[in-house]
Length: 331
Ligand code: ATP
Ligand code: LTN
Image (tube, rainbow, N blue to C red; front, side):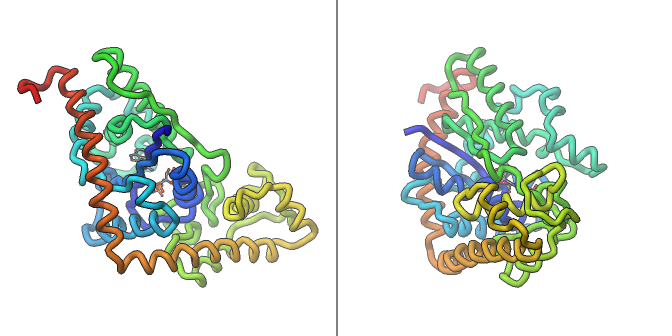
């Protein structure tokens, strides 16, 4: 069975973009692949966090993973810091990453370009830690959204570099970007991706939003004056984004099929259909979430997941440290 690994960084509440771009695929993949899904809490603190809020987001994230259908008997689900080898290999990877490579990473460049000040060293070296997260487990594939592809490319470069230098240490993984839904856009500004860093809060639907709030966000989504439900991301980005959301929530239904259903109908009817689909999905997820959050399932899932992940990670870290010449005592 091929192995797959992905991480999610809950610096805020999970949103529909995370679900469509990442989580729903994990659920599909867990039957076909040996799946590792972890909560990247080390990555969360690359930007300032309120401790109580961070803890709540981490717990909610696990609960939502499970509520969306990830099954701990199939997938290994764990918290990054429960496996200390991530930070350890992260440091080693950092020592093998050139500053020029880090300077090219768009996520950091974007934040800098926005004039954000006091950016942390952790944020700058984050791609090296991400490489360690991946390479510890020798996955074949790393499913990510569009925005993370560059980080997986760097991971491949680092793996090849270290394999050339020290012998065969790592499997070189491939990014897996889903063809549809890899980039769900903000409802209030369809030129920007749906993101928890959305200042207005109107463009992002959170998985724990109430039905009323979610419906309102869809109904007030930015559209255009063309008045036809047509998939054309360049000229009709708002409508195309809503079509993308609807398609993803309805088994990747084709755009042609959606266009046909709404032929001659107004945007009001179309938005209502999107809102119904979104609220139906949120309702399903939230019902499961409420059961999970008060059960002991989160704790047992994380304990079991970390035990399994640690075993694999410990063997890999030992192999790397030995190959580099860092160890003295034979273990
Ligand atoms: P931010 O919202 O602060 O920009 P993020 O949501 O991209 O951060 P994560 O929560 O770590 O960061 O994302 C988890 C996964 O969800 C990643 O694979 C990411 O590519 C995917 N993802 C995030 N936003 C979207 C989106 N708008 N559309 C599709 N996939 C997304
Ligand atoms: N950088 C990713 C989260 C992440 C990740 C990983 C994804 C951290 N480590 C390893 C895949 C594999 C993000 O911001 N979404």
